[in-house]
Length: 280
Ligand code: NI
Image (cartoon, rainbow, N blue to C red; front, top):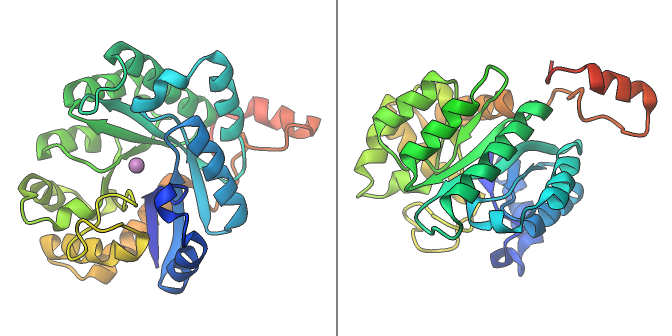
């Protein structure tokens, strides 16, 4: 069974057939989906998906392109949403100097705040980093502590940088790009990564793998990604699917109750929450 660790099913690209497509995903071996938000609006629509579909969990966070909409009030709303039982991560957060929509200092400021939130709540984080290799590494290093865990999603840098994140305990998200003929650097990264640190992801509706490159992507394409990873590592796609599923579950704690995310109205559980130090 496949664990889809990064999808955007609230995107308008799925408006016409979302219901049918998600039903098909479940029939075709997609066991669990993390729907990842990027803005305040998509955080709300992600939460709605998690309520409608038992196998969909959410990540709540603001993408670097959208941090201009954050202030203390919206950040506090975001924090409250992270306490909901089906929110499995803070994300996607990070730095994007490719689109460069917001000033670098502002991107860094809200990246730090959201990393602190992940730390505070004992949630893993989903990091987006594009053409911002050195600054992302510096920020993650500065924020890093034993309590902070996460995945560097849609990894687009080289093996040396992957090693830096592995050394800090992070997972690496691998998607459709690994099937592209010209993705030499990413193929090198996949060869050196321990299978135990890889998560499968689509980032759909974007980045469909071969043979569907250029079309709308969905989790139904993940077997092509597993196949490509398996070929690079000389193992069966089945093993890639099995191990990455266990990896994702270990990261997102889907089957463990989080002591921080309890009913706020219950004073007994508030006490527990205040005394809690993390997921265990
Ligand atoms: Ni994404």
